[in-house]
Length: 103
Image (cartoon, helix red, strand yellow):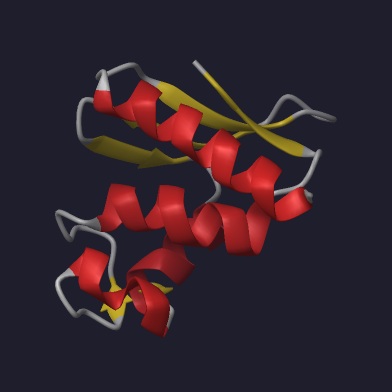
């Protein structure tokens, strides 16, 4: 059931991104904005996450490679970064009730 929820919420978030709506990932306990996406621009407020994205990137699971042009890693600055963060990194590494997307 959790997997279906993540897929549904990822689809809703992707629709918002595709419509050009600004989105931010927020820690709901503290109100801290972790990262913001707006009109193709990414702004990290968490310097550790930003450093991780620049240094190690987002590892793409084999099942998703065709959706990312065969790339095994997507780094910050790559045109596919927003898609990778939204569809791979967030659901597999961050998603829980403490962090939520807000427009």
